[in-house]
Length: 307
Image 1: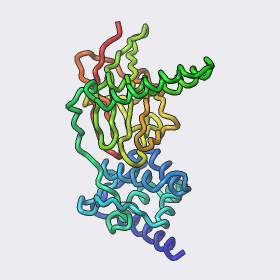
Image 2: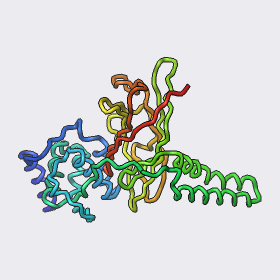
Image 3: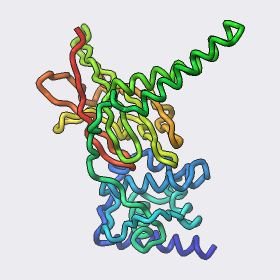
Image 4: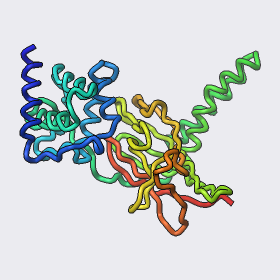
């Protein structure tokens, strides 16, 4: 009880006299998915590491501004249980965005909450062609060998079920070996050139298909809860456009260690009419801008118009 009262006093004092180095947040620059993450952590739905990643995203995007000397690179990120009250109050709109940001900033500054230093450098594109990735080739050969063994079943239905379980993984690996690999911290993105469709109404539409592999020994997440709160956008370096469709389940894809997933983003006429629509210009270079807690990347897109 004493800790909860102390935390209330802390939040009130930080709200009245914000730390001088803070960049005060507003509801427009704190993404909605972070509030969801805070609420899920407070309710015990997600683990502490996922909440720390969300706070890390705020730090790396200068919404929470902390001197670099106070952001630890230590592996220990244990947070006192009573800090969950702050997250719960914010998720339930008991305290404001400013109160949450300023209080978490203070907790980091005094060492109560430890947030690992986020990677801000743009990762280097793999110097090896994916076709030279012997690891992928070995995985494909192993799956093909397993598929061949499916023929040993007596019943056609058993053969079908056996092959079906392997088919999706095999197609994903074959896509990866035909793609260019980009390493973003522990996450590897595989991207294959895409074709732009210009429909009869003159609208430009492109589907970006990505294979994502988590090479980490802990869970990592991909966030895109809606067009206004998504860590992925199409950009030419001057303007940015939000997606018109994607297949990320519930806006958050949780990736377990050493797992591979395929996701798709479609850019075209936006569902919200007030948003600017994207029109493909073949003389312009486009990128998929990724801004995740585990790192940032502007991935060059290879686009051609489908004839």
